[in-house]
Image (tube, rainbow, N blue to C red; front, side, top):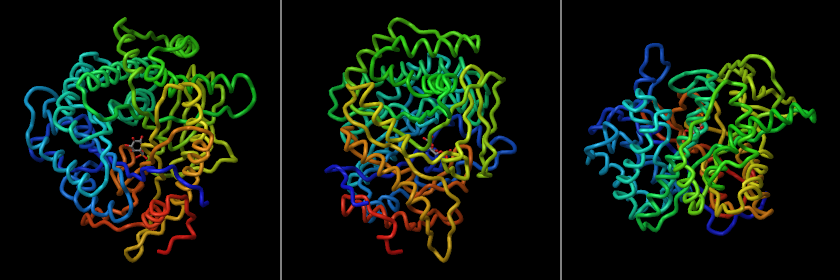
Length: 476
Ligand code: BGP
């Protein structure tokens, strides 16, 4: 411990509109895909009131200020601004985000705003979602409304949160709407279409003469071969190509490299699919790659890959019953457990080395990157609430190990300017509900009271000292 953070490092907290706001039917908000999905028969939970951030944001920002949190990731709900996705702007939505952004600034908690964090307007979802290229234009038009309304005060923007999760979870793993499984070619097409939408929104921002920074948030999953066997190493390369490299190339090279395309083509051939692109996509990519200001990197886990010739099979552990996950994809590989690496109750390997390696990889493979923010990292945990206190020492240890990995990468020359813990307060988890908690602040969902966890006091100490502190330094 005791390692110093870079000067002006942001100690942030992350949220996403749908996971915190609640109030899904208030003040003229239109429906998004998740409203229907979470209210389907048999659903275990929904987004009302979630953490009631729509009404409680002042409380959360006051706590942020008190606990040294000087940055917050928020996202904008597209259908609060444009209830049917396009057309008439809903003034109440603009007012809400204006008030929220102003409150962030007043509290010294700098907002980092994501335009799309999974919550596509329902009509577009029903009309082909990101497989339908019409959605690209709709997204760029929505982005313009946001840049015009908030661009005078917001200086950190991300176009999308985790395109890979939209593609993988919705079309391969089947735990996000539309719950399709093993549609690997569709997932690749969606990744491409999202990269075009990202590039076009970024190019629009740059054409508007605004003074902030813009980039994208990718989840960068570490990929490690389980053995030295060439076939396991190839499985690693294939999984890395579809999960990480394909989209990083689009964002930072401005094209898909020959090596990346060879891996993607191999996956497409084994899954009898093709990728459709338009020549203008690559002009958009090229311009955006020249101008991207920052990368938001989300990191939770890495996967250990083994070659796999069989049929695809997936089981999603969405209840925290340890040891139940299965993930093997035809034409790619199987994600297997590594007995030397511990996992969370949700079977996510705890592997901070993977975070370091992904940071170094960005700097090495994409030397035109300018800066990286860790835009999400944290540990899902079934916190015990005892007499108003939550001792979440395992979370502190998880985060400390990851911060140490980041500082190691910084020592090796990678430019990381901030860390946004997932999550600021406890939030709704998309496919797990409310018992998988991540927050610095515990939310008692019965009455929306907030309680700072031990991790909040630890985070505060770190922000004050500007150095990594150990769990034993915290009094709680
Ligand atoms: C990321 C998302 C977040 C958040 C986080 C934790 O993929 O960007 O929105 O949900 O993962 O995931 P989960 O809630 O499934 O544990």
